[in-house]
Every structure is written in structure tokens, then in C-alpha cells.
Amino acid sequence: MEEQMMHKQSPVSLDQSSLTDNLPSIGDDNEVTLESRDFSPAHLLFKIESFSLLSENGIDKIESSEFESDDNYKWKLIIYPNGRNTEDGANHVSAYLAVENKSNLDAGWEFNAVVGIFLFNHKLDQYVFKKGERRFHLINPEWGFSKFIVKETLTNPCNGYLVDDTCVFGAEVFVVNNKGIRECLSFLKATDSCKHELKISKFPELKNEWYSEEFSAGDHKWKVCVYPKGIGAQKGSHVSIFLHKVGFSSSEKVKADYSIGMKKKYGYVYRKSNNHWFSASNSSWGWPSFIPIAFMKPSGFLVEDHCIIEVEISIQAILRSIP
Image 1 (cartoon, rainbow, N blue to C red):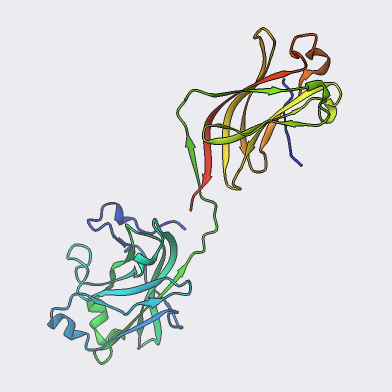
Image 2 (image 1 turned 60 degrees about the horizontal axis):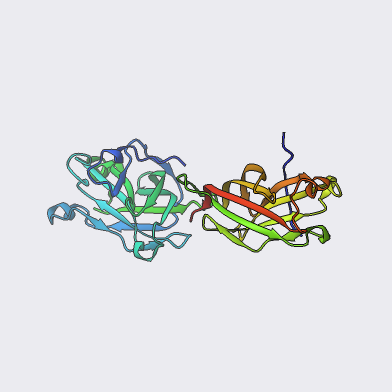
């Protein structure tokens, strides 16, 4: 086995119906049951007086003012007193939460949020509510319940939701602070490899490492590092050679097939090949024992004390972080 080494330099969406919903911009979950609690919702209380007049006046949709959650996102609560549509919301009151400041969000915006929609029960002195975790984005900026509560249940005064023809809805939203890593792995089509020839002058006189000038391969910058007297355990016995990727961002990795060869006077190339993921923390890789020092001159790899290095690189894949 060839000796090789690194060289270091000095919650689940609740929206099950949206797959078939004719209104893809609105999430809907009617599997969630009503819960109850004593304390009021954190971000909005929305009192509706003369509730019975909504139907009499043909008002099918009412919206709260814009409100802000703790994370500075802006929202509104939307109530459909007669249901959002006759298919899903028949005989029900529908309730939804919608992202309001979409034009001020970054392109491709997306976030997860735990949202709750509330209705006060005067008789029990409690808030009943439905809540769930939802992914909000440009295509789906709303989420809620077409069957939030049966309309007859709400309008019957005996149940405690409507008192003096007045009811109180509410909402709270907690955006999940997503600190997870987001990456994109791109595989590249096979292309011709990039080849470079490097000349090292006065090779036997070099005492320390030698670095080539930067060169390009696959839109990336590279250098070759050569230790004429070896490095580590191979110092004094072998020439050590490494390929070094230049200019990494901390979140980028590049997978490359590469070979490094040493060229004789009459064209023969002594070559070694490798495949490696290069990254900011692992930017160099190669061979501490590329070729014995004593083998160089007798075998014709030194011509007038010059050494010719050939490098061939083919980029296979790139891993990048995404916003």
C-alpha cells in the first residue's frame, strides 16, 4: 500500500393534505385536536363583536392587524366565519396564520415555526387551541385549520365561546432557530484533466521545502510542495511531494483525482496517483516517500540539476454550504 499522508502547513410537517389541496399556498391540518389552557396566547388577542352580523352582511373573511412574534417576523390571523371553502370548511369556522412581511425577507426564505390558534371559552375561563409545527416558505406562507371549530359549537351560547355575540381569538408563533448545517453536494461530469509541468532548478542545493507558483485546475487554485530532503520519518532518505489546495472557505470541500509525476530526460514519467477530499482543515495531501533521494540522479530524474514535475488534476465533486 502506498504511503500517503496529510501535509499541514506552517419537526415533521403536520400538513398532510397539501399534497392534494387545490390551494397549495395554504397549509391545512384537521387531524389536530383542540387542547385547553388557562393563560392567554403570547402574541395576539383578536376580539370580534357582533359575530352574527358577519354572515348577515356577507362577510366571509376577516383579518387581524399585523402582529410581530418574538423573532421579528410579522404575521396576521385570518378567520373565515363560514369556512374557507365548501369542501373542507363546510359548517365550520376556519382559522389560519399567514406570514406578512414576505417582500422584506431574503430571496428563497424558509423557516420552521411552532404556531397556535386560540379561542377563549368564557364559561370555563380557558383558552382552547390547536397548534403544530410548520415549514413556512414563499410557496406556502400560510397554515391553519379549515375545520378549526364547528360553527354551531361556537355560536351556541351554552358552550361559552360566544357571549353577548362576542368571541375572542388569539395566536402565538415561535420560530425555530435553525442552527443546523445545510450543504449542497455537486458531482461534476467527467472532463479532461488539467495538466501542468513544473521545473525545479538547482534541485540538489535546496535545503527546505519548495513551493510552485499557483496554477488553476477546475476553477480552483493549487500549488505543489516538494521537500527535496524529505519530511518526517522520511527525512534524509526520500523526496516528499504534496498537492496543496489554495484559498479555501471554511465550508467548502473539493474531491479531486490527481497524479504527480517526475519526468526523466527522455520522457519517462515516474508517477503516483491518488483521490482525496480537500478542505480548509485538510488542504494538502501527498507522499512523504515519493522517491528515494539516492535514486534521483542515477535514474535520470535530475538533468543538469533540474527536476521536472508533472501534475494532473480532475475535479470530481464539490461540497458547499448553502444559506
